[in-house]
Image (cartoon, rainbow, N blue to C red; front, side):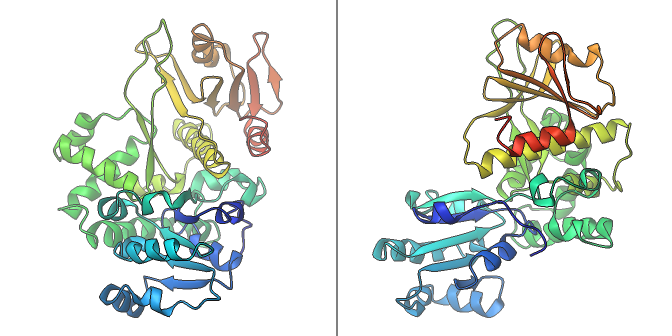
Length: 380
């Protein structure tokens, strides 16, 4: 395995079976084969395996031997009916563990709303994050994202375009998630243009030439197929009224570029700044998920346009500025939030060369230092 993943399932497996969710090509199967080479693997992408188990789900139970203690079922969303057998086996064999992987949770939520009635924990695998690439290649990840196969590819732009095409063909069209694939394709392009911005269903519907109600359903599809996250607004400030609309971020920087037909971004451009903000969001989201930290991740924006990119809980404010020199104007949002509430940390992530602190205790931190601090547990 070319990258050492920091995800650790060992402790969780001592307590429960697991659902391991993650978008296509984030490395779930490779990771599991590397970590658990003696486990029994059931690959539902294999046509014969799928055919036999879909006809007789009980074959999973009948074929298990007493010595088997870990079973990996790859792409469980392909056959939700198999969850009944998994449920039965978990009840009968207390030492038996399952890892159920999936690149979409949509069918599982529809067919089995309780996801084994709490008998399995849910874990999310993300694209590669900073410690997994040894804190190198930041600019490369801003161009191509963090999918392992793309970062090691000689033709990353072509692979990203193929990734989008495969998603449309196998997740959307094959699974019948959208009535008209051409409408969903147009929506994806418009949604990419709106990445990291306030969700405006009416405007997106107009630009994509589909009804507003359809756009809302399309965003649910993106979340269910693990292609993105809504970032909710922080609304607890007492004086300045905050917006109530969420933002939406795709799961990977490179995929957004591909959806927009853009081959990366150039430094000192607005597109570069948006890509850096996007990457910092993804690192924060992954850190909270991998450390099982349930602290809320939000953003703050007022109707008078004061804004802070990210809040972790109600104590840590993080603003992202892709500048080599952060000026007073860049600190207005953080200072407006400080006037509303007490904060334990006020951090501006930037491209400045040196770390420094302003007179009012706002920390200006270079990007690489911030990422090292984050994954060392010094931020959250």
